[in-house]
Length: 272
Length: 324
Image (cartoon, rainbow over all chains, first blue to last red; front, side, top):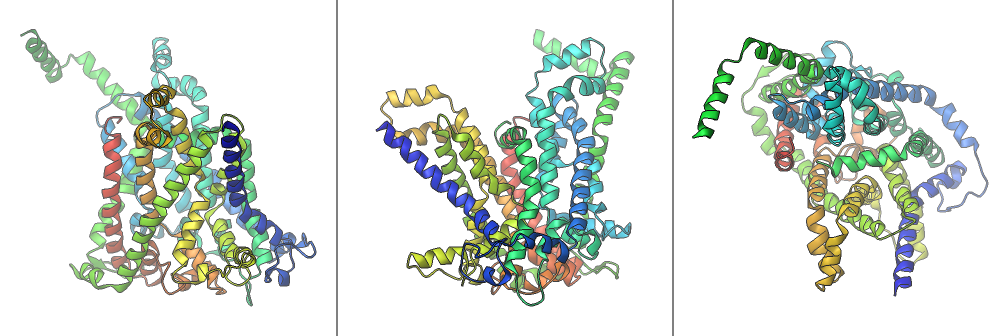
């Protein structure tokens, strides 16, 4: 009976694994086909064409999109941390009047669909002449990001107050307590928040579509990929190659920081 | 009596604290302000201001060139008669009603499965999670390819089994269910949250339940579910909010499935393909505001979305009230 359950569990898990992996495998196989074969029903490449990958680079300014995406993701992540870590600390570890109200406002902001505030904010950036650039996506991060503050606060709550009190008894001010005592202990939380922000920026489509679509030299990978089309028909072998190329960096980052990431995902839903 | 005296004494200090204390309080407030200042400014600039502005703009008509002009309730009356609003809202509500429960059940099912493994669940967890990492544009492209009506791998495999596959993203009936399948493919993030909650359920409770003669179904109902209820609530609320802003997958799927040779700027011409079946509320808002340039009316649409989102968020806030 026990062996039966064991076999059953693994059988289901293996079947599910196949289903989750299949789309990627088919995509990878297609990325090595010829243009003509990609339009047929065959699943396996008749002959292998790694040249599709270089063709993608020749067809689109992929390095340009990649650079823009990296600039967007890295700036957004660094800016977010500068403002969000201190705020999360004040929300988790300092007692002050109005704290609850501010936390509620941050949850509201976190839950607000971006489309609600789009028009007034677009007008604001247009006023400063910054539409057509990625600045409207990056500069707001200097004033914190609601989801990151929420995540960091949840993490900081798990650090016992005793450590902080010890630092204060030793004469540390609050900033020094944050920098010297809390930051080293909060590394996993900060890593998770940073990765979420990085992934969000990397995957973002709505933001870049809104602000950069008028200026092709500032496009990100998401926009470039969505616009990757030829004049005559859809060339699926090239689209497959381009699609896989945009996934690679994310998967690499994930494998290097899997633990911090999983811990972060867990924290958003469970603790608090 | 003593309690009363103490309360009085407390009130006395609150009314007029000694100068040293007052100074200390002021310093503490400045310290808090030094931590919170950027974020407080952010809340004003990116939450309070745009919300107030949207409400005001919703009563005006203007575009990028002309200044706002007060038109009273005209936009609001138009909203009630706008067939596109009805269509887009219906599609969005369909997704909320189907996509959110489907993702939660799928994530709960895979979570329960993985929680039963004593060893070796790490590899499965990673494999189930990986699709959630795929950028939405990339994942959507992959699915449109996979579900191509004539020659896509899915319909090819179905044909081998003797089943005539539907037109998927090219069929008005099947386009939204295809998007649900795409959403199910990326349930990994939810699954990890559920898995953590499932592993947190105290073992003793299961033992006690099984001593009382509870079978697996009863254990799930009376031990597992109450323990993971807060996480389920969180997943439901955030799921509904995410689905209300459903944009990328619908836009990209329509554009690619239609086969139109468009570029980023002109993508909106294919929105809703086929026959408006994937036309969601945020897509209509985007088209009204940034393709038709009717910014006043776009704000009217935004205010409605805001009211719905805040009503959903209120449920979540009730849960967090005790922690804030």
